[in-house]
Length: 431
Ligand SMILES: *Cc1c(COP(=O)(O)O)cnc(C)c1O
Image 1 (cartoon, rainbow, N blue to C red):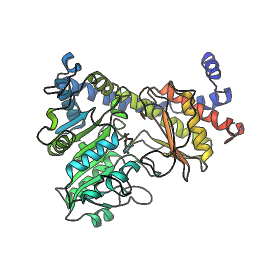
Image 2 (tube, helix red, strand yellow):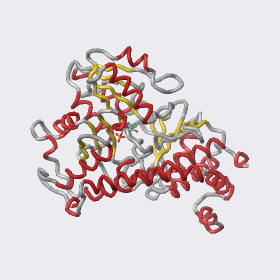
Image 3 (cartoon, rainbow, N blue to C red):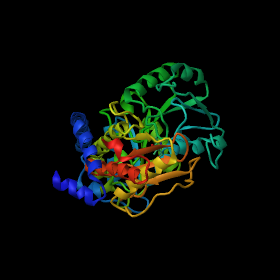
Image 4 (cartoon, rainbow, N blue to C red):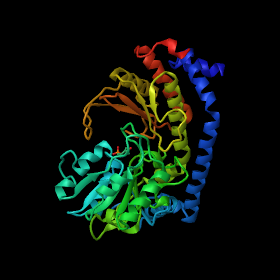
């Protein structure tokens, strides 16, 4: 312990911060045990799906050119389908990010004249342009697809009456965002999503229910398809890529939904048959294999941050004791300096680019300046230790990731160190 403390000090963490953090980590032992138990269950689920589909050495070598008969790609898609309880899956490096995966799922399953309903309030910022909430080139709105929204209740949770009121003859697809994203609302649990799915299907059985599953994978023992959703969508540079996938997205669910997406990703007539995997499959397979424990590490980091910042007197969401449904931790500072100092601390703790200083900038897809801290092996990967925050009230920072719990712990302690250095807090609060 003494030598660890000394090394922390050499790496910029003063003893008062180390001792403060250590006490909090100590108090979380029981909680971490239950996270490890979930990770164990999900680890078995992943390996089980790999066994069932006879993942063999041949699956690890990729194809080039058109990518016909890519056994590794096709097998991986079967593994995802089994694992997440879908009929079919599309898991491709040609899906460039989470927003692309969601746009693909929407554009391929909606037709002009249809209406999209968000049952969980305002969707993730980048989807505003996909949908056309903010006018944008190539949006769903440009194709004559309209949008309706049922907000969550002020205290969080679905507003069933609002959903009922917004469902109509033209509603073809309902989207539910599991994670809070850049909002200060609670994340939805898989069981809550299940209740909404049941309710919506009882009113309109043929409507497609899509869940934006970003950041939610492997946090619980079940995923939204197990409670009746038709399609789940996510990014491989978040949880399911395990920190190893360098690109990619997935869509899993009903066969018809997935096929629609495949025919839009490649071309009508080609669908899933083309799309060379090149050399990427070992990282996709190994990343999925690592994903349950990597997600558990990120979760421990988030809970540690919540408890630590709560103790420092800031408002945190989720709070220190709440059950978790995604890996995001929001901390509200009420002023830009807090957000900036926090991000500086994360950046300085990163394995790569620790010498860089993050600055707020007008990032494409967002409606205010955003500051992002990430010194990652995979650029922009948010399953790795990272933090970001829009520079607008209430000045919240969103923290997530950590490929190992030990690194997440160091990163969070370093944010406290930077808040002290930038005089956002004083050392008295550590006592
Ligand atoms: C990250 C995220 C997205 C978008 O994914 P990108 O890879 O950043 O494009 C969409 N929805 C939610 C809830 C997310 O967390």
